[in-house]
Length: 381
Image 1 (cartoon, rainbow, N blue to C red):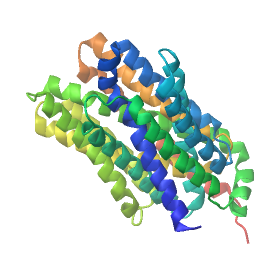
Image 2: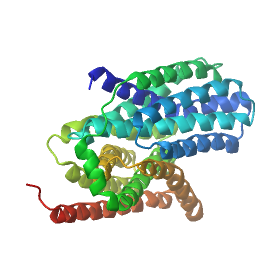
Image 3: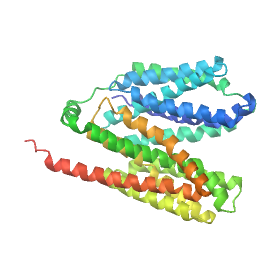
Image 4: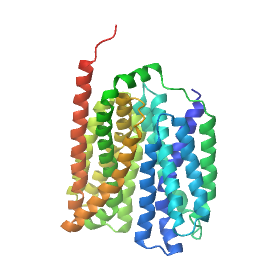
């Protein structure tokens, strides 16, 4: 497998990281220029992320083909947004989000196929590249002149996406090995159970990440003496810790078995969220944000690695990514509902703590299930 083709996969994933957060980053300017109300802005975000989650369902076994379709739909959605008036903009954003979901899911599963012996490390590095893109996007947007609109960015987005669609079309990726095809047949009866377990873990993980990342700035202002800049600092610590953790994960996986790192990370996430809940001063809050972000970092890549190892290249793998994606919508929303009812955001964030506990229980069940399967598989001589 040429190294250049693998590097293009990582570069494309960096682009998807930037494109995922671009709408939210540009939304304040778009709202001001087009006189959007909060409900309209929220609808745009919901459309993108819901379509992205649904995009994962279109990814079957031909990952190269769905990757081409994903980048092509991103390009088409971006171009349509230039000319789409009013309500048609939602259709353009839905197309854009659908393409993102297809491209990200296809790339993750393709990397999982290409690196069967170091799958967790390769996927951690892939998610690190996504985090770099999501971090660089706001920094780049901050330097754009104030009169620069979202639609003005659509043409370069379409061009870059088209380039990655063409490179994915021309690249020659190896098919699944005979061993992986045999594993798919042997585990066929257990695929549904694996999908349910790992989709639930993914849903909880994405929900915790989105909840802490989305609410931490507001939470900081309510429980500490910090002002607006301090809230942004706490959020930066959280996302910076995730970036650092994803960079360190491949190194840690050389020394620590992925299942052990997985369980330990999920346990520490619950400790990090507890620190956030107990925080009454900036130092403890920053410590909780850093610990939560650092230990969240390796969880999703290892989740996908363990799922592929358990279920193989099933055509239903997209369900894991799709259900996980909806965690970003449901768990933060539920946090807001509880916070409003209890008149306490601290009470609302208990949702993230209980989600971490549920994820730990599911992980322990997955570990026990995997060990029992190893004991029942007959040895081959």
